[in-house]
Amino acid sequence: MVSNYGLWLFVSTILWFDGVVACDGFISYLRLVLIHWDF
Image (cartoon, rainbow, N blue to C red; front, side, top):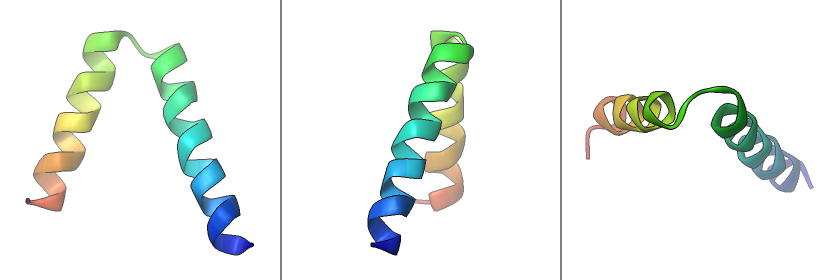
C-alpha cells in the first residue's frame, strides 16, 4: 500500500514537472538524475 502510494506520488510529480517545466528543462532534470544515480 505504501509502495503503491510512493509510486503514484513519483509518477504524479514527474507529470507535474513535465507540465510546468519546459521540455528542455525536464530532459535536463532527467540527465541530472541519471548523473547522480551514476549508472
